[in-house]
Image (cartoon, rainbow, N blue to C red):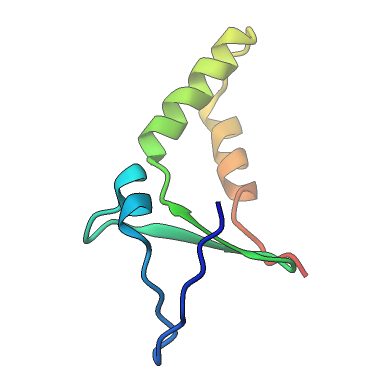
Length: 84
């Protein structure tokens, strides 16, 4: 789906109500803006606890237990860096 919006004076755009409902984007929710060389993506902020639970489930199903030291290393390496 492609939706066109006019950019306002302050650089703001309005997210259509159907999209806000679909992704539960209510007032006060945080969205992530991912900027690449080719495009801009706006998506709901991911629930960090949900991500951690899924990560540990995946690690266990692959027969691996992960240590806190390994988890810290993954966190240290996971900061988003600009892609130029």
